[in-house]
Amino acid sequence: MPQYPKTDTASETSTGEVKQRVVAIVGFLLFVELSSGFLQGYYTPLFGQLVDHWEVTDSTITWFVTVQTLAAGVSVPVLSKLGDIYGHRRILRIAVISVAVGAALVALSPNFGLAMVGRVLCGPLAVWLPLEIAIVHSRLTQDSARKAIGMLVASITIGAVLGSVAAGLSSSIPSLTTVLLIPVVILVLCVIAVFIAVPESTDRANPKIDGLGFLGLAAFMLLLLWGLNQGSAKGFANAGTVAILVGAVVVFLVWVWWEKRAEAPAVDLALVTRSTLWPAYLISFVLGMVMLGTQTVLITFLASDPETLGYGFGLAPGTLSLVTIAAMLPATIASIFFARLAKRFGLLRVLLFGLSLGLIGQLALIAFNANLPIMACGLIVGSFGQGLLLGALPALIAEEAPRDATGIATGIYNSLKTLGGAVAGSVFGIVLAAFVIPEQGASSIGGYLTVWSICASAFLIGLLVLPILKRNRPVTTVIPVQRTV
Image (tube, rainbow, N blue to C red; front, top):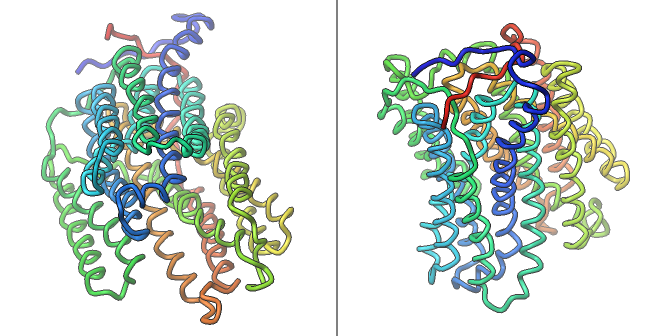
């Protein structure tokens, strides 16, 4: 695969041409990620109707989310690596088609079993962002790529809000099949956009495929996420749960042994563990813990009756939805503007700001959880910090990874973030259960304080490892010479 020489932006391209290039490359990708967020936010408000539609129980419907998460855990590292080998747009096309077919199958399924097949096909939804980051990183200058990554991350959040609102508005439609077909229409437009308007990336990895490495990685992610799910449902002392998690550890150790000896490993462990990347990956795990692992915890706390339990604010479901949306807004704004801060202060300082604000937000929840206005301010501050991390982490990882490994590098970021949320969700469930008040059937305030203390400690760990993160020499702002695609 030929290497594309780097050229100085000023000598090759005018400012106007650069902006046109950015719009042409990023515009349709923003629509794709907006659709990704829309799909992620669309189904949750419909769970009650889905239970009746497929005649399943409330506990069974949780597999609607679990199956997609398991499929994502397997597909993200595999497809992102295949993008490095065969082209990120090519794999993005496959991933978008898979999700569109999966969503259509969910909408048209007469039974829950067939719907689960559709949810498996929706698993590659999580690899869209890593593949898109690889495309923009390959096609744009460093500053333009950072701005594009920030906008892509923000569009997911905006799409999730729009999806949730759309689900609420469409829930009055008599036919649930019609309601479920709405996101399918949007996904069909995504397929058209990816095939017609999205360019291909310019760098390729070694074409040799480490088949056993891919299978081992997929098996490890599947066993680990399944074990965590079983632990949440049946407890981590359950024999079945222990067997699954032990199996995950064994598979991981064998996989590491194999990858160190493979000629073209699925994941270059020497790359992942070097000081330019592993602290960023650890912070990615921390971010997933707090962002994905505490959503239910926060909602439960805010909805709790203070007269009965001595904490909470007894907020109604409608108010809770507004609080959730309001908490997303600062993260959306921060992810859009992180590139400007990075240009002025550097990416490492942006990570420092993000971790510090995240820590302050958790400390505010611990100290001021009886005061709703101050607690809301803490949520806003923490959300802004998380938004900075959402933008800065994948940008830094893409810049520090070799040009032919951008897909797998950012795919690992996405997987670790998801894994952090899964681990935190299981651990926090156990923590709250340990503080349950028998007479009330709900956790005491001590459970929530413990959860927020864990999150604060996680951000503190991120701050402690940040100085270890040593960046390579600054990359010159360049545009690669493009070939005809």
